[in-house]
Length: 111
Image (cartoon, rainbow, N blue to C red):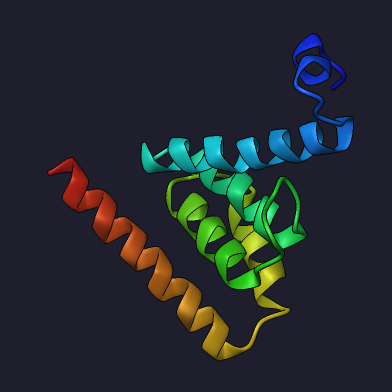
């Protein structure tokens, strides 16, 4: 990650890596807003592992895996199930509520 731009503006490789990680989540969120089921899955992975600039959040992970599964992503249902094994019933209900809200908001934007 050591580029001329990084050297010019005195950004350390660690800071540049953090910026790149944050960009991956931002790009996935933008693609998810367009209904990209791979982006849904990628966000589920990021939130379930606490990677790519996302904090580990099983509720958000379940939400994104759920959206990916509903959209036809082949691996998403299995990942959603694995995450659910680590969650309480209340957390799963919250994740499902958030997924429904996302779908409702997406439907309103499309109309």
